[in-house]
Image 1 (spheres, one colour):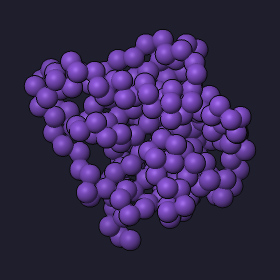
Image 2 (spheres, helix red, strand yellow; image 1 turned 90 degrees about the vertical axis):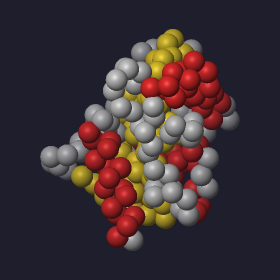
Image 3 (spheres, helix red, strand yellow; image 1 turned 90 degrees about the horizontal axis):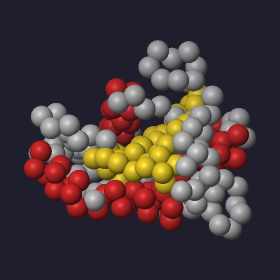
Amino acid sequence: MKKRKMILSVMLLLSITTGCAAGEAKALSDSKGRMSLSQQIAKCNSKESAISIAENGIEKIFGANKYALEGDASYNQDSSIQPDGWLVQLYDGDWDYAVWITEDKNRIHFVRGGEAHPLEFISAQEMKEIITSEEILDSAKALITEQLGDDREIRDAYFDNTEEGVPHNSVDVTLVMEDGHIYMLTFYKDGTLRSLLYLE
């Protein structure tokens, strides 16, 4: 358990140092008319509801079995390192997950990591090949439109961390929707999704 807490603490620090936080997501509903994630978050007023939102999001985004997840949630207020709101920490046999749901509900952030999935250095040549192939970019678009069922038009889609001479250990993709709302996705070098941040 101590090891899991350490991994989640590292995930928290990584999230904060990259400027990522948490909050609300709109248009994450599916075609069957079930309650969208944004509607769920609007009702997020307890530990139970925060955990439920996190479990549902982890299942949709990462394809995890939400019934295999264990963990807890805590409400953070007046913290010097993260915004006010819920921090949900869950884990299964493969991954540790952290989900931030901020009080102002204008963003939500899902992150996963673990000892078996370390971030690896990406060389300049590898980054060029990743960008040229556009496989990860296509994967990001498919995740938003197919897994999350967002039917808004994607106005712009681009790689974020492409500066030459700067060390990278992830591949970052930004998708700008027709209404200006943004998805920021982070992938491991092999194309596995590591995190999703939704901003209004």
